View (tube, rainbow, N blue to C red):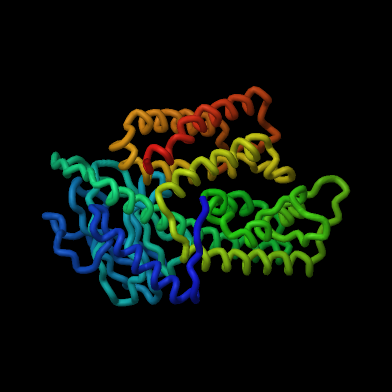
Length: 394
């Protein structure tokens, strides 16, 4: 998913990004705004955000226009998100709510299950809870303005990238702390789950050509004399092959510090990216290609064998890009939208067969038949997904 970083300082870039994002979202039915008078008839849902709680006045409401009135009762700047049930796809958000302030988030939401989240300090995955919207009988008008639908989809994906990057940074700091301290069991426990945030936004992360190899290079990818840093060097040390000489304490500390510094650099740069519908479509296909060429072959995580965590994350990222573009696709090619829904569901159902607790079985525990079935479902999804970009752009 090629992206174009903007020039200027991180602070100026972030300000410009927020302004552009707000301008793109405000005209849409799923909009974050301040003091909006289009509140639902039943009145706003009150949200209190503190350092350790995200308290809503109700956990359910009727479909249609919904207003959340978010009061920051904590000591840090906070954000509030309404997400899809999967906790990944962002429906709408309002950010930069300072201590003592209240801002309104107005959305038009159909019946379904959702997730709410407050994010004090605007980092990590936030304080989350289930939220349900029941059927009111009111049917909102279908927006057929392709440009408006496209702008909304790209703005939502930018919010998704921002959220995943924040979670990646928070997880990386926790991993690095354990790894540098020699807490190997804790570091191994955090390794795969933290990397999922990277894998979900991999095409965006890879667009920064100097950062990608510093964070994600495998040993086999190194050029002669190239310094090896990043996740996979830590992977080899945590899941060592026979005969491997473990890193020394100073080497672990240096590697951990570099991992955090590079991830902080990534987080700053992702605030300045620009995305378009073609980049979302191409990025979705790139993520599935990553699955086909690395994850389903077991080549990505050759020591930890946590390839299925990466597999799931790549599929998540591809699906979120598709779902953000779905309203456009349903206008232009509803048959393709239906086909992609079916094939994403089939692949996800097969992946679920290999779930273990909150993770997955290790790749080396899969039989050849199981690997082949996953590969065939990836191929089956890859064909229609390759038509996504042309369908939404042309």
